Image (cartoon, rainbow, N blue to C red; front, side, top):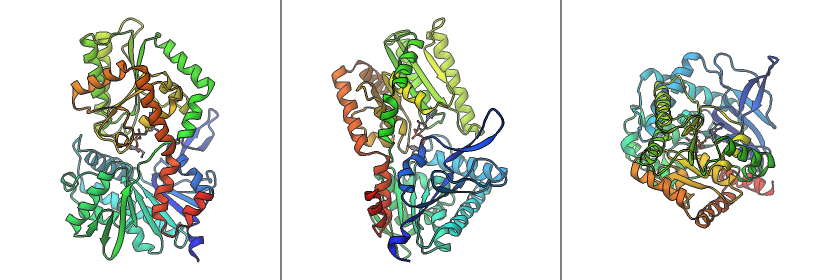
Length: 475
Ligand code: ADQ
């Protein structure tokens, strides 16, 4: 098979398939493409080639047979209830997730979890080996599947393997805490290209390969077991044009006005939108807001805050504790500073559709994004792109990947409570002309650096034949 042919076939491997099972009111079950996320990012690319997506469909027990989604074949990997607990909630989300996010919560280690992680990675590798065409491109995503590249290489040395990590890759001091650190690193080094959100991650990885495995490395290349492994920074982005289009719709503009009216027509609306996760710094921003109310710098009902927190991973202890703490803080703020009919914080623990999110973004004078550590943070990018009116101000934590790109945001260190309060006030008090100049500059940046540009740059680096890049440029 010639090179031109082989690059016309791609396998995407991610823990989750890009679909959700929905149950209609009449009880009929059907699979729908998940909104947003990777699948929209990859859609324009997957359309041009023969594509298969391998991942978990969400339930436990037997894997369902799935229909193609927009021309992409889907293959479900089964997980038992025990495997879900040990591999997904356990090793992925209670060991790796906290450790890779600066250990802001204590990582939990269990040997059983590691065994399950190995077993599930092998299952993903075997299914990929079975479906990948000869010399296909395989693109593996995220921390759930770090052992998979090397396992796949052993089974299918002909395929070209890319890995992309969506979350931060930690510095050596933290990574070295992992009991099975060398194996994890060897797993990743099975790839031809290991991509990170930022340069720090790529450099941490390169140094560790050298220190732990004695690999010869000169950034961005690592020579390991006689092969060259490339690494690099590929900051992910959003579908900027789609966000702009959505935010410009008359019904979204009307809805944004309605939201402001429902909030009592305040002068300032401060907004937070996050998955309910302890890395997102939700409590830090609530505390900053409470103190600004307490010293009368801000007043209800002139200023109100809306905090949207999507429930996530609620069976894990850390998450349950966080939810209680956030709810207690919201209750405290409302108890002290709310008025009858006018809460100081509107707390919404729900999922919203894209149009409602866009309306919230457009209704907010100030968006506060304060993670203690975040690989990228797409919410910050979505907010900026939705401000087609040139309004809005973004307060952004320095510890997000997005901060390296959205330089015109009001950057803050969320650990520094005084600094966070000051950042909020700087944003609220900014001269409208200055605020609008900042938003416009960031919007320009996001137009040039959208999710398609991200996927194209990653796949161009992965595909040594150049054939895929040519197809993408024509497409
Ligand atoms: P996440 O930690 O999930 O992603 P983020 O990048 O902010 O964080 O993405 C969250 C997504 O969920 C956004 O697209 C947002 O619109 C959506 N969302 C948030 N609240 C919602 C709600 N109430 N209803 C519906 N949708 C909601 C991980 C990493 C990030 C990295 C991404 C992509 O932790 O650092 O940016 O992957 O690589």
